[in-house]
Image 1 (cartoon, one colour):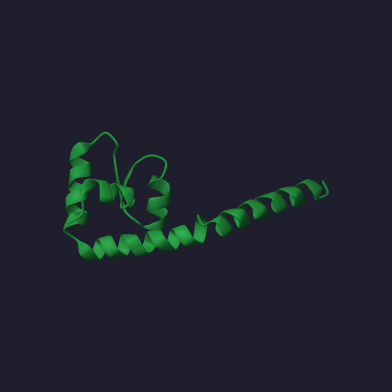
Image 2 (cartoon, rainbow, N blue to C red):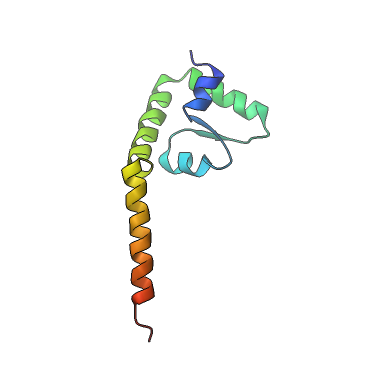
Length: 94
């Protein structure tokens, strides 16, 4: 059985703040309100008793991390941003 700390640290439960959008888009966990302990409790119990959902969230989270948050992915994203910014500044205005 998972402890509360393990569930939170592995981001299968996310408070509806900064990481919530990442978790939502990746389908990598349950989003709960930071001010609702009952909702948090229900999410913990749900994941503690549902191996297949935990595994799915884990797989989805790992895929999202590898696609968007590794050093290579972040560097490439910034390079694309800068290159597109330079291109748009050089584009002739009509």
